[in-house]
Every structure is written in structure tokens, then in C-alpha cells.
Image (tube, rainbow, N blue to C red; front, top):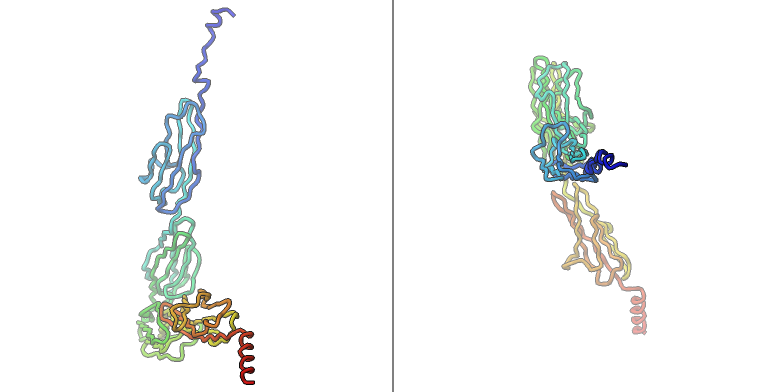
Amino acid sequence: LKLDTILSLPVLSVSAVVAQAPVISVEPQTATVRQGETVNFRCQVVRGTPPPTVIEWKKTNSPQMPDNVRVEGVVMTISNARPGNQGQYRCTARSAGGRSSATAVLNVKFAPKVRLTPAGPLRVKMGDPVSVECRATGKPRPTLTWKRQGSTLQLVTRQTNDWPAVHPDNSGVYICQAGNSEGMTEVKVEILVGGRVGAPVASVSATEMTVVEGHTVKMVCQASGSPPPVITWSKLRAPLPWKHTAVDGVLTLSDVGRQDSGQYICNATNVHGYSEAYTQMEVESPPYATCLPDKVSLRAGDALQLQCLAHGSHPIQFEWSRVGRASLPAAAEATKDGKLLMAHVRLNDSGTYKCVATNHIGSSEVLAKVTVKGEPGLLFFTFYVEVINCI
């Protein structure tokens, strides 16, 4: 080629040949945190020439970053995460070679938030339909449960609680519970059903009570209506305790036991209808301890096992000790379920052992007598010596 031909050829730009759009990645690509926690995302340049001059973070579908998000260089920090921070975040890198983006996803777990529609209290007429909708947000998605206050029975497990035609006995407080792994939230709504003129409306002084075994309990039921309604008491799926009296709406239970726990129903009735109110009673009892066996005779080297048992309200704790001694024998092992174990007893392990059973109401103790005799060979030697002496 001639020189002037060579000089007329176009000169390629070095930068145009080697410039490459940046390639980036985000770590982590997905993160899940609890409400209130802090999380960091890092935008990393994998390759690109020249290096990016601008790296910026933005939240997808949001004009601006939340106020608890801080960006320092390539790192985005979300402090005290809240549900509103959940979503997709985009990191964008720019250089002379072009631009590139990568996304990160943040999930925020939080306890349920519950809203009822309508919020109540609801005053409705007998026979009218009623519908209450319970909506809950939360992550993970919460499960919904309806129940009636004062009752252990679950009503429904769905979003809407419907009554096609309410009756006076439908009056009460209803609770929508929403739960997930982050917690439980509940909202209450009161429904007041008005009947025909003079229809009874019953109410109890306490919808829930916890009492101690052996005490006397009074449940008070009042009812409005004209003519004055007749008030009677019953127990759900069981007869009333035999030690009871019911006078003027007051149910008295004497010397209550654990078998008296349950739901008690006040029923008010007149010519215009009836109404019910409920009281849930739980009877708790102190422990009553027994030991199996309470007397045991062993030979030296035998294994010992004593079992302390207790009836009463749980949880119950057991504690073993040796009467007249500061501590148990070194070889003794006391288990959480009330056992006292010794693999090989010795003569000086004889004695009286005490088990104390305790719960949040009281305690009970029981004694076990342990007798350890000498080994058979030693007894035979003693008998032989005594025989020789007699001869």
C-alpha cells in the first residue's frame, strides 16, 4: 500500500474496542427477616471495562426510598425492618460501556394485624341476618379462628362469621383470632340481639373463672325481661355437681373438685323466648403425693428404684431428700419425673427418704423407708460363728 492510502484508513478508538457494559450481582438475592431486624444487601461488580462510575439503589415501584433505608457505596442497609420495606430493590451500575441492573427481594415476617367489618358493637333484631368479616394481614399468612368469649368451643375457621337469623342467645362477645409463627392477635366484637318486647336477656357476672379445689364458688346470673324470666342453671354435657344450690339466679358450688371444671350455662326463660349466658370454670388442685413402694428391703449391691407420683394441677416438680441427712447418697440419682435411683445400694444407704411434690398452688410430701441388709456371705459367716460359740 502507498503511504497516503495507509494514512487515509480510519483510526479505531482503543476505548471503543475494549469498553464493556458492567455485569453486576446482588448478595443476597433474597432475604427474609423479622420485623425490627436489620439486613444488608451488597451490589457487586462481576466484570466490566471501565469500572462503573455510578452505582445506585432504588425500590421498585416506589418514587423514593423508605426513611429507614441507608445506602453507603455499594451497600444498602435496611434498619428496623417493617412491613412497608417488603418488596423488590434494584441496583443499577453505569459506566462508559453501558449500564446493568440486578434485583434483590426482601420479605418481612410480622405478627398478624386484624380488622373487623363492621367493628361493632352490633345491635340487631331477633331473626335478622348478621355477618362480620375478619381480615388479617401478616407474614407468614395468618390462619383465622372465631370463638365466643366464655366458651371453649371453636365456631368457624374462615374469614366471615355468618348468622342467617339471630336469636337472643346469640348475644355475646365474639373473638376473631389470627395467628402465625410471629404471634397471635385477636379482635372482639359485641353482638346484642333484641327480641320481642319483654324477651329475656341473660348475663353472668364472670364469663371465666379459675378456682382452687375445696373452695366454695358462686356464679351470679341476671336476666331482664317481662314477665320476669325464670332462671335455671345447667352444665355442658354433664349434670350439676351434687353439692350445689341455685337460688335467685345464684349458683353456689361447695367443696369443688377438678371434676367440676367445665362450662356452666344460665338459661333465662319467659313466654316471649329464652336467653343463655355462659361461665367457664377451671378447678386447680394442689398435689397429692404417693410413693411406690413406700417400704423396701434390699441386700447390699441391689438396685433401688422409688417412684414418687402426684395428682394435681400441672406442672408438678419433684424433690427427693434423706431424712436426718444433709444430702442424698453420692450414688443416688433423682429424675425430673419423680424417680429416685441407686444402681448398687450399701449398708449405710438405709434410712427414710422423702419426696416433696410442688405446683403453683401448694405441696405434698411422702416418705419411703429403705432397709439395706448385709451380703449373703457375711450373714452366713455371722450365723456360723454364733453356732460355734453355742457348741
